[in-house]
Image 1 (spheres, rainbow, N blue to C red):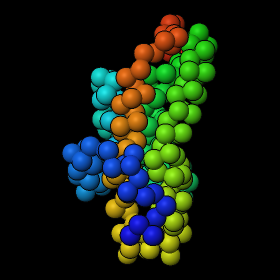
Image 2 (image 1 turned 180 degrees about the vertical axis):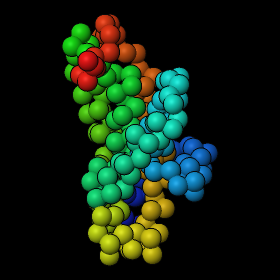
Image 3 (image 1 turned 30 degrees about the vertical axis):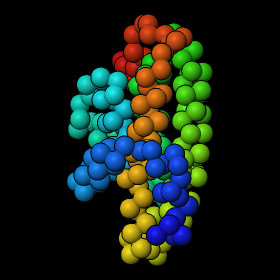
Image 4 (image 1 turned 90 degrees about the vertical axis):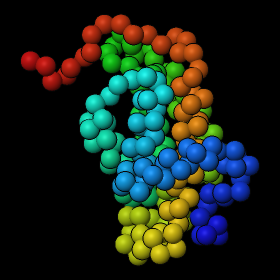
Length: 181
């Protein structure tokens, strides 16, 4: 399998990933969750945020398999959504948080790329899920098997970034609703 994928499971960074976490991700995948759903729920739980599970799963469901087109890996997009829960902003009074969020996102991207080789699903799996013939190869050759390790690795990066002090993050004012009447 290793020659069929970019992400090298023998990478020392990936070898350190908690095997129990990989098993939990496997179970989530067996239950048809996407990598984006797993990392988003994982991040929310790590922050102690009680999200409506149904809404969280629905909101993050469209990002798996690189948004179904081999683009940015769903484990990455779900993680970036999680970073937004801690470092994001809700109104103009909190807009300064955006700079902090961008820094955390860049750090996540750097570390994920270092461990996995790319941020893009079609590069990680050397096949584009959005192209039927390539999607068939993903399944026939079981290239998707690496996804549990990749997703667990993303969760471990989240652990580090979400545990950091949120220095400079502002929470004030009301949620801005552009559709309020």
